[in-house]
Length: 144
Image (cartoon, rainbow, N blue to C red; front, side, top):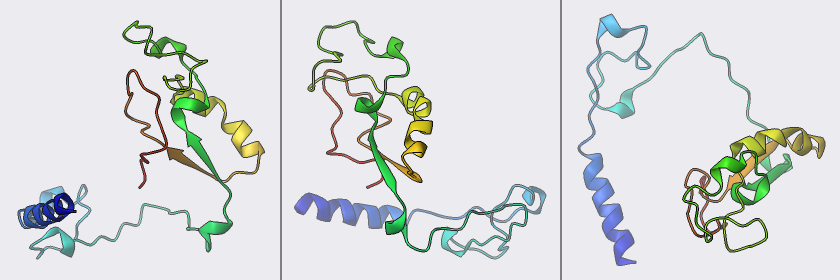
C-alpha cells in the first residue's frame, strides 16, 4: 500500500516536468498539433483529413473475443524455443516450462480463430517478454 502511494506521488511529480514543443510552421506537415499557442501537451489538438477510422462497436460485450495465452497457443517458429540450449528452458510436454508459442504461430491460426466466429483477439500474458526457465502465465496482462 505504501509503495503504491509513493509510486503515485512520484508519477504526479514527474508529470510536472512534461512540457510541449513549441509550434514550428516549417514542421506543419509532420505536426499532430495545430494549436499554435499551446503551453503543455494537454492543449494539443488536430484536424486531420487524411485518416479514416473504424467505428467502435456500440456494445463491446456483444463482440466475441478470443483470449490467447501466446506462449501456449501455437509454435510457429521452433528455432526460437531453446535459445540458450538448456534442458530447463523448453519442453512441449511440460506445463511449467515454455511451450514456444509466438506471433508466427498466432498468425498461422487466424483463419481458425475467425472460423469460430471471433471478431477480436485478447493477448494475455507477457507477450513481448520471453521468460526463460518458466512458463508464461496469465498473472500479467499486456492490456491491464
